[in-house]
Length: 246
Ligand SMILES: [Zn+2]
Image (cartoon, helix red, strand yellow):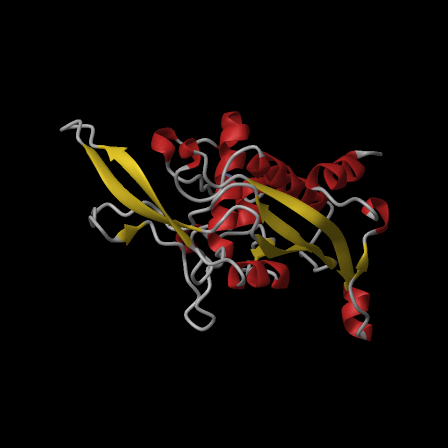
């Protein structure tokens, strides 16, 4: 029987080194308007990075990195019925595939702009609700005509707060926690959102900390405390290195 042992919390900052679109490229061109909207929070009226998009990107980068194990034909998202599949156990299975292996290990929270970023947006004239509009020419592959269109993007230099919770149920989960950090290092060398090939979506994780709370801590009401072995490490690469060191 699987028993909950502890939660880990990876917290820190997602820094946008280049502009970021969070939504996909809209199929329909609206000349004179803007497409590819970032995802806006309905209450704050500010862009945010949905946890589901961060998690999906991390998962797909691991599929490609470990293509021998997890890459599916035709580019479909990997899913399987193997109870010990590290990718499915960590990132979750579709409801139809729910079998033993326990609950999905990670929760990726939505990431909201930090205070410094909100102040920067407020004080910059060309930024409205956290987005700037940029005109670009897109080539229609069939007619070879260049079509101007307008892209809304979160400006470079913006930062979003990051929180990932990882639940440990057994010794195999140590390996899976490392997989999450590996995915973060892969993402730093890839991109988030649409139009990565056009230079958008380069991000970096900074000011990271790995915290933990054991089942006893939950019982006694103790707060998160730094994970001893990785204390002081602030990048995904450093934390991964310390977790891997024996
Ligand atoms: Zn699987």
